[in-house]
Amino acid sequence: MKSSKNLAAWLPLIIAVCMAAGIWIGLYVNRTYRLSDGEKKFSHVLELIKDEYVEDIDVDSLIEMTMPNLLTNLDPHTVYIPASELKEVNSDLDGSFSGIGISFTMFTDTITVNEVIPGGPSDKVGLLAGDRIVTINDSMVAGHNIPSTDIMKMLRGEKGTSVKLGIKRANAKKRLVFDVIRGDIPVNSVLASYMINDSIGYIKVSKFGRTTYNEFFTSLVQLAADGASGYIVDLRGNGGGIMEAAILMANEFLPVNAPIVYTRGRNKDDDSAVYADGNGSFSKASLSVLIDEYSASASEIFAGAMQDN
Image (cartoon, rainbow, N blue to C red; front, side):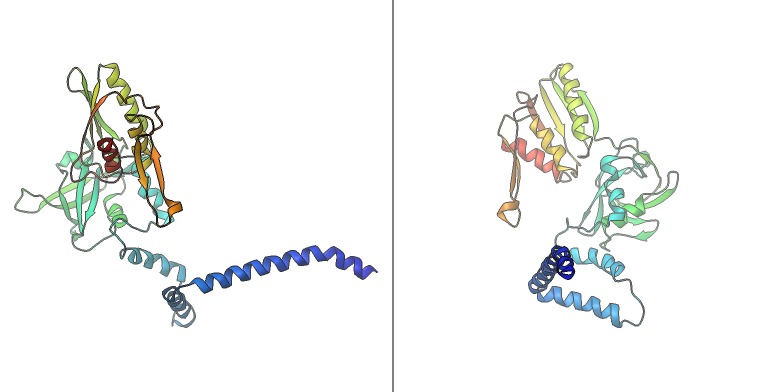
């Protein structure tokens, strides 16, 4: 009788454990079954390294080092950012940092300067948008397909330290050399905002960061108070950033249900679309958008939404 009572007490726990084990085994078997031949091969190679290599290897570190090379086989805009570097990568969108005061893009295998922050260290020594960085501290960086994250590490550093840049400029016959003293770089998205005549306001937006929409809206309101009925939004050299900022900016100029952007994924369920909510304060204003070959990403979304509507 006592044995029966003990069994009754333990039975729910035994059933729960068996169910959990069954679910785990089912998921494992299902996952193993769905692995492609390449995935199985990769897993097998890692096991061989872990078990058979002559020295002890940290497999996780090996995978971290392999991941960037793996993604280079996709497209130029797909990169791997380790968790330890994410804050640094995003710092120019939501904080301040010490650096040389430029934004750049890797065109094929060459570092091209998109923007030189006015009043920043690079601006003071004469760097220009369109310059190509060939060497950093006498080390050749052009033609070596160095990841953008590594380039950022080379350019950023302690305030007051120096970095030597070798520059190829379109109208210069010889390579130019600049010694840039790193300094604190404020993250301001709106670099200029002023009236160009009695009715037209001009706004220069350098990037799409976390504070961009607030800066932009504040500029619009101030220019409207100064008499602006039309606006020029200058996105030349703006390489993009956070898409949400571009959506919020576009929403200010569009009537209700006007399409802003849609995204298409591999599966139909991943598709999404964003439309103006009709609460924009400047839908009646005239607008011109300036872009150039360095305007990309969120800049293209904003400009495209304005053009299409």
